[in-house]
Length: 100
Image 1 (cartoon, one colour):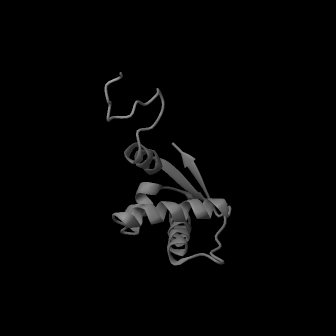
Image 2: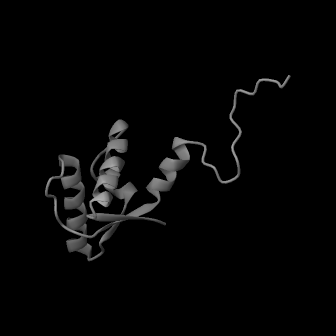
Image 3: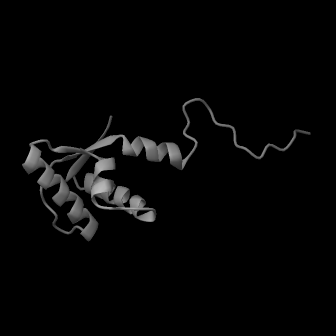
């Protein structure tokens, strides 16, 4: 009979969960492809507006997710909503998410 092991065994290269996934998302860059917010929610509109203003001011269309989250003052569970909103924008080809 095998002894009970309460901790799961992870293979090489497998992520352990939310913490490592969150760290990789923070290290990614978001690039604005289209400045359109048609049929977008409030959070998506604010993300696109931030990316557009950043592009106009500095001429650089790419912004890190960490900067977007800090600029929009997103905390706790709202951080997950912000990341989901970015994924929805990527699905609609408004932004592109590139890992660094």
